[in-house]
Length: 295
Image (cartoon, rainbow, N blue to C red; front, side, top):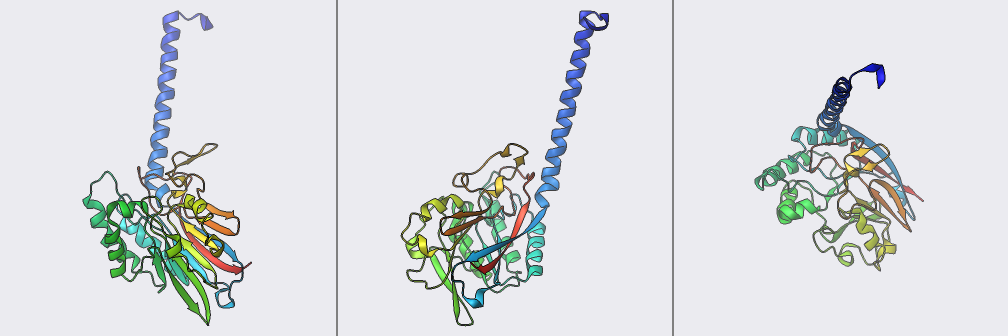
């Protein structure tokens, strides 16, 4: 027996050591949680991503598209943080802004919260100085009230691409932006969303990234150059050697960043907001600037 201590003294010493360890671990855990809640979820990462596109028209070389996603206003993103995001986008002076869903949240704070938050979200987004702005719905938007979200965005000059497409003309050249209804909660119609004979590059917005595997099997898949998604929050909380703790359905194959899926590129934005808990750890919010280049 070490140091000739009586058995009861050794047990007391071990118990004190155990309590100290648990106390230190608890304090460390509380510190990490406080950092993730107060600082981690308010960090912003500006990501620049080159998008090489086959047969890109000359007028769209260097065309810059900013993508943001998953705002989740008021549960838990604060309006001041969204205004900061909008100001950051305006400083970039992009040619287009694409919003890939989940403007509000269906969460535990009550059904009145998203209805109160959506007009505030739309008003903040109306301060984007870029005139070309398009959106698609996310699973939370549809779960709350998809038509309401579409209406509020439209009132502020932001069209929603709902199984539809729009042509962007520039100097006689053309680029197509397509969008589908939320794949996780609704019935996305790629035949309606993707033009049959585009004769120009097509960029598709779809909230859930794992929908890309369905897209690849569709007859119009060869017409789609790029798919832009969000939904995963990049995992939101990522631990060293472990990775993301929780990933949502339809967001487990493609978590964040760029993927090459045959002839189609997929980019998954980490989003602005949080769900479940107001934490981000090792997974900052993201504003993505995509620059179109000829492949």
